[in-house]
Length: 238
Image 1 (cartoon, helix red, strand yellow):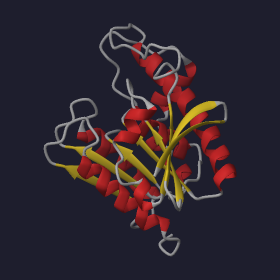
Image 2 (tube, rainbow, N blue to C red):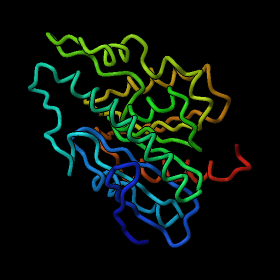
Image 3 (cartoon, rainbow, N blue to C red):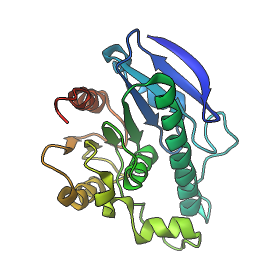
């Protein structure tokens, strides 16, 4: 496996490239995260033939920041403005990566990145499969005293991605969560799966819950995610 940096769709992308790539995996980091951090949480993926790609969300990493702060009175709007732009950029990066490498493409996201995965799927983006680590398809509850005025952000609350399950097209999707997550409570993930279930064929929507895990992508979650992607890399399963 080698590491390489290049530009896709105008974004500075970090790649972990296996000797014999079998598929692309676009990994989307969470709030306060970076492309380097999300890739560090997915050991073994490149060794199994996944060409990992990651780039920094707006206001993160090498891009002009700082990330949204919970101290800001417009924190929620700032977070979801970042998420909406991140989703638009991710779509463009994914499309250019597919043209460049001619490989099937999977998605993975952690926390805010998981919400972006849901955004993309709810907009009809067709991936071979997807992983949603420690996140949900519903926006966060509004902190006391905060209101949403931005029309695009308000739309996320009026019609969350998880309530647009018909648009997901049955893309294989695994949610991975911990029982002790205080940032995105387990109940939010469970609510997401419940909302999506009527729109999914048997076997394509799954969940994995790790006892005692908090708001972090654990090694066990990473291994379970890899096994799920490998299963759906086999076209005979689809």
